[in-house]
Length: 152
Image (cartoon, rainbow, N blue to C red):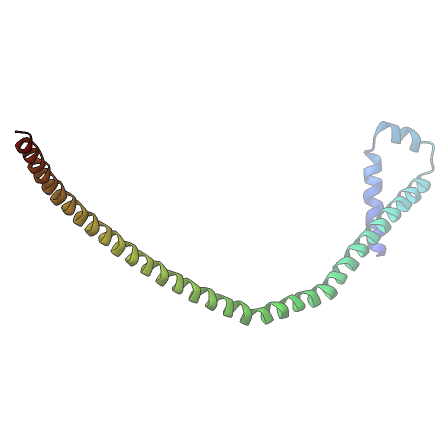
């Protein structure tokens, strides 16, 4: 600690020699020992402030270390307790997906069979309609002939 203070004092003195012109004018009125004492006091204040800031950061870190472990372990334990529930939900969802796929396949086969039945029924109706049209044409021709014969 004493070596550090002496080294710091020497550095401050060296920096003081190369200081600005305003410092040189103000410090020319001061005693050289007073300069050193003033510089050491300023350095002491600065080091004390840095130490307090560092202590505050260290206290925050230690608080986090003490409480963070508990928080982390509680979140891990809650996640571990959720694992079986999530696993069963996944299995249930997979079962629902399999059932939905089976229902979709059934619906597709029903739809294709319904389309085939509609096509067959349409073809039958067209055949019946053409048969009716030809028999109607024959009936109309016969009616027209009878009407001519009755009129003559």
